[in-house]
Length: 510
Image 1 (tube, helix red, strand yellow):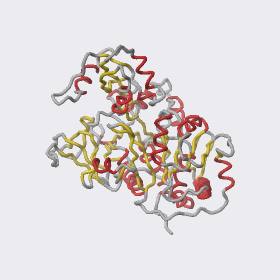
Image 2 (cartoon, rainbow, N blue to C red):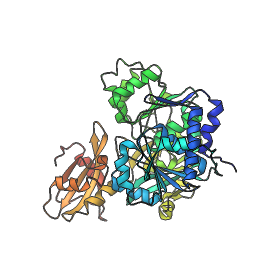
Image 3 (cartoon, helix red, strand yellow):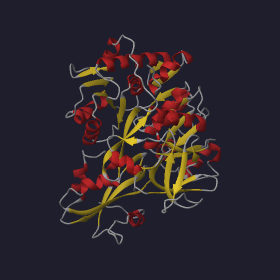
Image 4 (tube, one colour):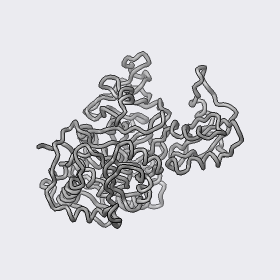
């Protein structure tokens, strides 16, 4: 029996990196051999609870060493790891838990009630809590689970084509879809990162973005551990704490979204913090404002950026640090083992500078959505993944994103899909029609705005109240605009581009 998957990574590092710290979190640290032992014990515990190859294990929690313990332990037994966004509402999580058919749930004590509300109606048979007390027999404490597991793990036969994880991504037509990422997808993505971002074994990566997002896990945590570097985990983005951590731990790499980097540069500790160890700043989600770039350049720092999506594990392109100024606004070149093309409206490869739909191919690209064959078919053109994003390649192969075909809003690094919000607003009998768009925001980059046509008298507060508890807070519109009619095309489709132009700089009143 042979396990070729990610579950064996830390065990393979056990001897190579013995004595080196793998993870620091608060006042705790785990050396590679300690982390490997913890993973083995949890793998034994999963097997003792009848978790076998192909079973789904849901994780509800923020950045913590046991997020990675659970991820790798699932890989050892061949289970599929399903991390869920703790910022979502209970109803959203409930759907995902039911959709993936989870058999075991691991949650942090600080989001215990969220997990309880989300999983109450599910078929989850076993529940484990991190950093919290047990509630026998329903919930076990992870330290008790690990201490009672003494046998060697029964390692499953896992190939690179086997599913490693399911990550849920919202779409344009309502319910989220589970992107199935294989061990091979995540391995090849890690190799792309090693090649294009020069990850080294002395890396000290500060993880401030949540690892339940594929960018933090796939572009940060996994490549760093593959090389034998160190992860410093932070559960929340607090600018002051981030700056202190950079100086205290000698951080070499930091990833985030433009909002995060802006908050750091505007913090009172910015000027006095020693940033001399930093050598990699990677920004994703949207382009970095020029004023933020200039603030970091004054400290001798440059950004690398890139483009990707959950379905590509997530890297598709990267913009090297030394090329950032020369290609401002570009998302860079395709990753080393990945191909990117742009297709025009006629279904042919676009010429340099010609705008079309971006498509991605490579061993890091997912092959399917969980139990969604129609969505899988629609998302592919042969071996190419259709991104739904619009852009162009220049003569040198640099990609520029010009529009989001799916009308996605990126708010503080979180993807917000208007259709999901519109669907709930339209449930109210007093609403005739609605369009949700993204409008600029100094702090979050974009925030949702709902433009509503009423069929009966209704106040904005009533609409917002209907969204509370059903959607994550970051998805709830910042404001509501009431209009007599929405602009439409000749075929009846709402012209959202016109709405974005109209409301981008207008005062927003409820």
